[in-house]
Length: 311
Image 1 (spheres, rainbow, N blue to C red):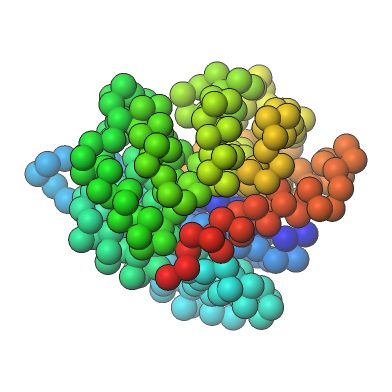
Image 2: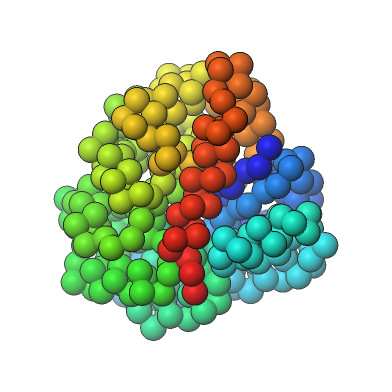
């Protein structure tokens, strides 16, 4: 099986623990990812610090950008940094993991367009406009949740589209989400978000939001964080979220966004990224055909990357 996962925090974990991608003890490492026939993974630069006017977070981004490239260089036999779908396919042909670079929270770029240009040149291909903290671009889903995109935020989104960087609306406030949708000229993604109808949480998407992403031909990545799933979740609860999205017409929209190394609790029975294989088998048992499985597990996100990440 081939897997293209839109979000993990393994880079940030290794930044803080000093572990290596080859043998990190969290949810994701090279050995685990190599159990798939082919794997592509977005690695997010992440801080979690609240943006402040008197302190730049850009050095944190720069340090994690440097770490990602050092890790890939040290494991060049197993990984390749990719910025396009063609580069991903080339990595797979060589038996390597395709590593994509993202930023979770534009405050890591100090919300500045000049830093966005530099990040795009360094290979960043997706940016969450916010994490949980509000910033100069917008409110977030859990703080200043009634605030949408600022003028600076709209300029930032326009520039992202020009540079071929995916606009990621996971964590964004609802007004910010709709501001992005109104101005979008390309597919957008919610890299790691579930269904608010299936599990009421502001981090999840309403049916209208999912439909808006679907109409823009974007993707929504299933998040395995237990807090964003119903009940005391197991694999079947993840299936319920998936099937709710499919009932909305999302066959070409749903993707994967496990949030590996970014969550404390996973569904019962899943301990790390190899859990995608368990999910795959569960869907096979439920009669999912190969065409649909391929869309969900890699083709949908690959299509969006192919269309947007062209530079």
